[in-house]
Length: 352
Image 1 (cartoon, rainbow, N blue to C red):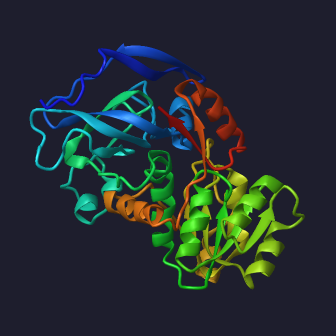
Image 2 (image 1 turned 30 degrees about the vertical axis):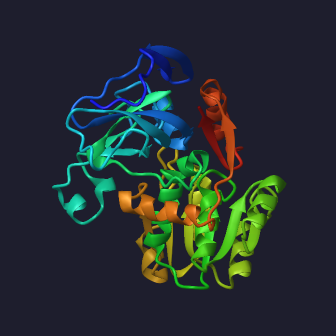
């Protein structure tokens, strides 16, 4: 085992005590074995998926561990005995991602869709997450973070940025077409606006409130609809886009947002589901809707390691700039409450 500096025997972690309670505790600092690597966290994002895990609101996201967090950036402090020391060294900056480990053998993995692997392990669900001063990662599934990117800016890209970047790939829109981003002022949405503009798309940003309208305009959105103020979001969206959005990315967790999206998507357009609704919902349409309009309805679950690498390159080049609000480990519970209300502007990031 290679060591740069001896980490403390005990360190801080944020622990889930119940569906509405978190606590900052000191626990024994984990020790890496085999292919594991111990990293000291510099920054960690706070995601709506963490909220779902803690609230236990999604049937397939029932956590087996009590430490959440999956947007972690940190430096290697210790290597397990089986780690390839020619590839990874103490001091390297690396990521603790949502997709912690995958099988590499199933159909999804072989097709380059490891995020859909049935045997995947997820940070904060199957293995301890990164809301901690120190955390373990597996060197066989590890991503190096460019030194040019500030860790606070890199953290949101690991899940939020990767998810919307992958969603835009899925939508496969052409230069100059309209993409509507629902929840455009939030942690995922504000990144979607930027990735879409870099790719030459016209962006209709949809969210509530003047603060988010101003932010989306500064980020390059071509138009903004305040869903709290409009009398007819369908008519407004169709008028702005000249017939409906070619693609819609729904980052909101609101059932109403999904219902409305189907009313202003263009014929032969695509709606990409991203936000998970806390309650089961059904779409108020039948097969005839798809038959008559040729609309596609799909979803995306984060992205691959390569998607994250590509998404980070835009940040490295200064083409995408995550808007972050820096917090401490002790602030996470309060941040989750704001996320739950839908009032967050940008992305909360814990700095350590």
